[in-house]
Image 1: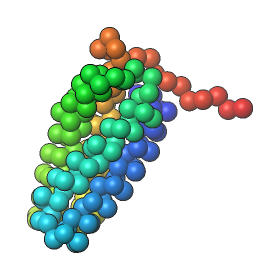
Image 2: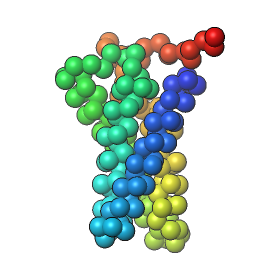
Image 3: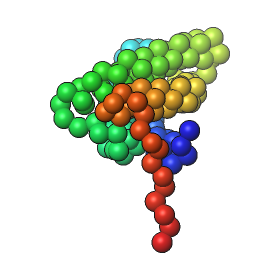
Length: 145
């Protein structure tokens, strides 16, 4: 696992967490939606946000350019990170909120954390694979000057 790419993945993910938590708060508090429906919508917002930033910041060297390649990568991202995040978050939220009586926002933060590593591994090995279908050599951190 490349530390620099993992760091970038984590930065994007941290911003995605803020997007997800803000959406969850808005949808449950301001719009009055049920927490499970709001969780699904909030996760999808974060998935789309993260895809755009991962393509441009985390894996810019993988050649994911052009409508067909971007659409294929977005489909893979939804099939992997989307399913992992939505399914994992909904399952964890139900367990933490209904069984563990954890408040909604802390429960969501714990759910996100539980899905992080699996999302990175699947994204690195499958979603943002190189043009040949295989992962390309890992990018190195820029040299200090």
